[in-house]
Image 1: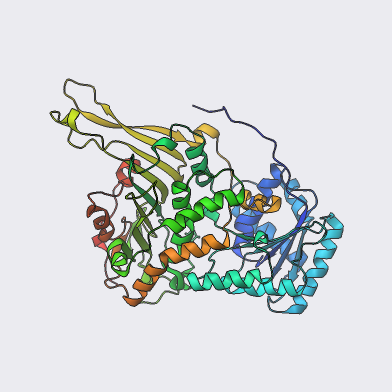
Image 2 (image 1 turned 135 degrees about the vertical axis):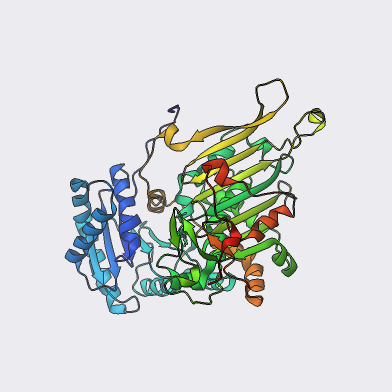
Length: 524
Ligand code: BG6
């Protein structure tokens, strides 16, 4: 069924501005930022008064930068480049070469900004995008301050997008916030989490609050527990050096998984205004029960992938990946049980899991409803009427499905499980979004709803701080403990089994395929 009762609104164009991308010669610019900007321009959402300046250490100039981007964008696109559109961009792309610590480079940048402002009449608005390694965040912002490129004067805005990871733990996140705020106001800082650019993540709020039949069921009276899964089939790829210092916990939990958790659990905000939504998300982070060291040991599981088979290909163990120590104890898998101590969720566990080299690439939120009272079925062959489950499929097959029980036709009372499905691409058509469109656009119109506020980042780190501490004090033993192509270590299953529950069987419910077992991991 193709849908179509959609409400249409004419969106406002983004404000005029110069966008400066720090670390512009890196992957993010050609893979995500430019394709997203092109999509925005195609939708008519960029201002004509717009220019881009790439700033990085690589020895390039405006011409060679334009050429490099043209090749990169062409290579990465699966459709032929729209020449007219690309020309529009080429006419407004510039490059400044420099070292992020060199004051003279910021003077050159300032001159280039002035030229671009004049040529494209960008009205003095500056959009700084820090697509750089985290050790440069504070340095660049400090240098921008010294070069007088952060002040908002004459009604012009200056905004800074900071990529993740935002800090390495609670203390370093506080320190980074402090350093940024020595130069910028909180309203100028846009801490990005690309999960919030995903349509289906944004849809969690719409689904919960725009449907009057959902909200009354969304609490501990009806919900037994919630499972949030972000499973990847890829390994660490070329990011071994970074990943060795991060691990799955830091890389995925306080940011992406907590976004899914807070949107699922938050109270209804009074509006979609940035602070109204973020206040409610922050309340959830503060309501999460801080685990004691014993609870960390009991309620968290870490794992590391061994070699195995994914999509019929043999893949190496984590310890054999480039730039990974041969005896590394870095976790590539995390599962944990969290409790939210408030009236809506008291006693409803939230189980989270994420890992690399798992059986399928899937991100989803599964809401398991309570079983029905049993009396009616006592004398029938139905033993466990745990029928209702709502799954919000974040990726790759975006949609929502509601499972319920139905009588299987026949002369005995048999229960069958059936699904009611909403499929994004079928019902709304597919879009070629990179996930960055909305975030870039929102920054240009000054809407920070989908960005992290300082207190949220700090609260998220504070929740996982006890886990970091216990794991550090007791290094993992027995790694690797799951085979690539499995669903992670057996202890992750035990975590739910102890509570009389099980992870949703995504493999057989969605794919009908088989995965390797965790125990087939070989020690390397
Ligand atoms: C990034 C992590 O933030 O998110 C990666 O650093 C991870 O390790 C990625 O692979 C997952 O994002 P997505 O959009 O591919 O699910």
